[in-house]
Length: 456
Image 1 (tube, rainbow, N blue to C red):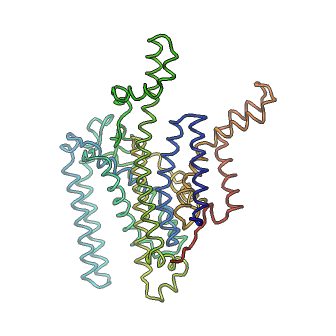
Image 2 (cartoon, one colour):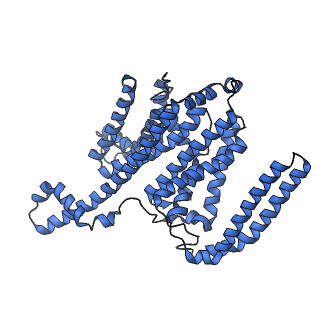
């Protein structure tokens, strides 16, 4: 238990800060921060699996996050019958051509030795396949995107439960990681980082521009939720009675019935938002706990020790008979699948899919900062890093505003410097995050909770 004292202390401090946000700002804001901290924690677990366990640099987190979000649309959104009638057959035919191309190329790679003939055959299959896809998909895409583009203009999804899309998002990301890993894992670390970043940009670019798939930059709104809607709670007698019971003391001091009803109505509105976010927090926390248990078991298992050995010295591990490439591919797929799961969770939390928001600064480098700040190779540290960095990201502006008001309290309200600082408070986010990261890196260079090897 003593070895986990730092972990317990760090998490107590973190949750205390979130509770203080609830007390001094609002519980809705505190729960919003908590939910995004939990989603960030899932992303950092995925990144830590790759970097902390195996030393793989993956700058394509953004692409796997986007694939997870795409899975939510393709699984949970109701299908658009008009779009399927207009061009669905064409798109199915195009998919069939892609599958045929993959099967044919794999067959040629297995049956023919490396030669010019094999290269020409593969090139011919690719060329013919692309021409067929162009002939089939071109008219189909135009027909699909012409179906009420303001509302739909895409094929829709399968209309299935949204929680199932989380699993599909993990498989989407894992499938892409398998393809990328087969191609790029043989590259040197810096080239691997560049390759994964560029492939992620390609994935996001495709999602942005292929409107028939998920409306592109027009966005998909009104996605399903695995929890109740606020409007439904606000008209539910059990919820109204529950809010009234919890606020009975506040309501008793109000004399007139009309004022009491108005106050109760506002309390119900506020409570419905808190209740929904609490339900989402429960789901997200469950995922984080399950992943933490599994990753902790894996980390200290023989497999985990093997991965750390490969990370620390690939040549020595290879000399001992370990298949380094195979293990790297496995860890690359697992980490990417977890990031895809997080992407699906994030879109579910937002209730909308916005491909234009998938930017490297938000989904790649911030996640890497979280892992490094929390502690590489330590699952508890990676999760804590997600909490710390996201908390700073959201609360930096309010903290900066408080500090500005505190240090300029002696100045008049019309003072030019004070007005300028207050107007610039939102931009202090980057300054405060930079200072926070620098302090952590200066005094905790291995992260807040550095990796500890427990001998078993």
